[in-house]
Image 1 (cartoon, rainbow, N blue to C red):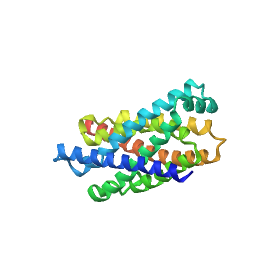
Image 2: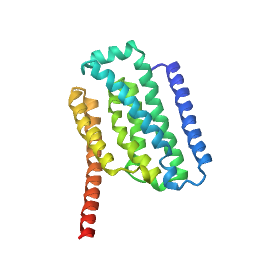
Image 3: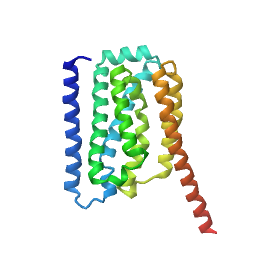
Image 4: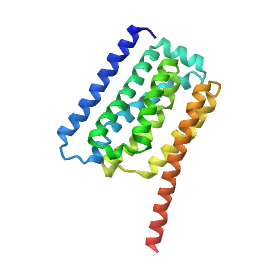
Length: 226
């Protein structure tokens, strides 16, 4: 990667960081009554919805390429999708950076878990690795898994939108089943296989937590009815 390209990437990354920062400040300006918990999900709502839509775009091209990686790459290349993909990875990285920064000052207690500091730092390195190795087009196929993140984030921001059933269903379909499909499909790439298996383990751990908590709630409701 030459110096000129690194400079271009850096400028794009700074631009997106500024955009996320200003978005956060704007929401806080029009909603000065927000709680710390609500503030913690402002950027997550924006990022997860954007990345899910990007995931749809890349998956559309993947399946219209008959799930052939070479053809998928060629189709993206002919439509400028590869450069677009690089910019999107920088966009996602900017979210991680600004959420780390703002979270440290404005909603620290919501960052002290696996989906906070640890998740953001690890995924920042994965983003850099995806750009450096050129596998970001495969990486972006996984962004369908941002749908449950969006459902969870908007439900935390406004309880009237909370839907535990929908969150659990979309989490299972995207972060478990579809993730397993992509892991198996690209298993010949050692790096992708290793990262996919590691993230799948984390997803299974999170899903187990949701599953246990959800069914405990159902049992409690049944006991209350009795």
